[in-house]
Length: 236
Image: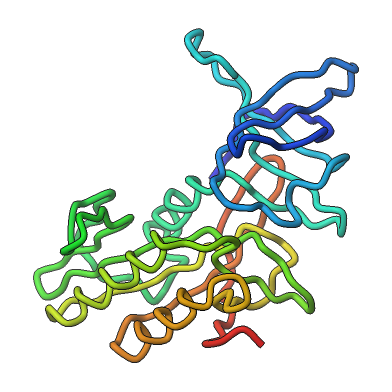
């Protein structure tokens, strides 16, 4: 995924979930949109170097969107969580994700399930449907361990229940961890943050839901999924 020209800045603070104050190299201070609903632990430290995109939509109150951060440990991370769906779709279409090939079509945001959800990606062929729920992972703990979610997530548990239902109906279902943080080397459910999510995660595995994790190469010019990461069934 090629990125548009980005504006380099220094983070002052993130607040009200969706706003961030930054200072440009010129000394100008501005408020940017923060496209992430999570806690962003480790990715929103004051004085971190960040990069912003700029919209040409004159109706936007905040024309700049926070896209990337260089963490205090000098890792690169993409905090724009919605980009994860596009990254995974692009990687499937280019053949990078070998586990998700040999389908005829790919659709996005398709309604499904008993709890009125929308699946991120639906792969279809004459023989099979594959339901893929994508989760962006940016929370790095010790020793290269990345965990999800970074805050209690009832919505995340709902998505797991929907995937279990798809398996029970005879379909293929995949939970896909899109790791947009260069320091993460393996992924686990965040049992210490959301124990209920961890329990439902393991229920999904036992029911036949597949779990994949791929790491991304993140730079100011481009983000692309490139390598498989191991998935642990429980947070160490």
